[in-house]
Amino acid sequence: MPIHRLLGLSTAAVLTIGLAACSTPAAEGSASDASASGVFPVTVEHALGETTIEKQPERVTTIGWGNQDVALALGVAPVGVDDQTWSMDGSDGLGVYDWTLDAYKALGADEPVVFSTADGTDFEAIADTQPDTILAGYSGVTEEEYATLSEIAPTVAYPDAAWITPWRDVILTDSAALGLADKGQDLVDSLEEQIADATADSKFEGKKAAFFYMTAADLSTISIYGQGDSRTAFLSDLGFDLPEIAGNVDTFYQDISAENADQLADVDVIVSYGDSDELLKALQADPLWSTLAAVQNGAVLSVGSGDALSGAVTPTALSIPWMLEDYVGLLDGAVALAK
Image (cartoon, rainbow, N blue to C red; front, top):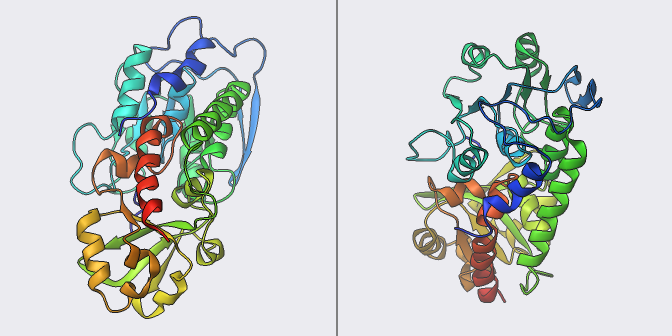
């Protein structure tokens, strides 16, 4: 199954951290001079080895999900990025979301080359951007792909496992590769403060929520994203407890058949892709899923499919401030229905 990936606080609030560290905005994809005072070389350890970057990156390319947003938030405009909308039904356009494009504009930088991911990693297109550093802190890069990428430029992969990297670790890993580790920690601190402010009046504590992939057209099997997946982990960041099954999933998702609906008996709020009205009606009409309290109460929040919110809820350095206020508001509405 594919990896599925409004306006709250502004993107500029996060960009301020990066821009404050730069004497001038980055352009043409080049890095700023913010960390060029003897910090290099830097060595970053990750799941596929360790990577040494000898000097301040000047041409950064990113692959995977959200890595470009880390660089942009720190004042570095990547010259090439993976298609960020590849798993969103009906998406079109450049292949990156508004919060990313807004950051390029704020930095006065050219829009990036966007690589198609339809047939896997496009090594030729990546090489054509002539990168001196490749960021893949949140990605599914294999050892073989990593070896090929490393022949193009020093490549920093995910710290632990493919497609399971918390947003904080994405920021810390990518910022270390850019020689901006301190600014990366500042960015994490800023986002945590924004989350705390946005949820100060919410009643999420003590409620159990998890993130799912469901389709009203076929409820014979649904999928739950595990605690290591950033969508479910972000619900925990917002103050929710996780149901037992989410805590037991050691990959990024697990399928659950309708016959095992009782495994979700402790879920107070269901968050899923899809249309809210359509999905809730289908769940309430289903003889098995309708036995769940969350379904009976209507505490089902669908975040859409193919639109910006459905992408933003896989949190990145820039999508968090972009969606935070509205996402919390929608969750407040679902919690109000939970009993």
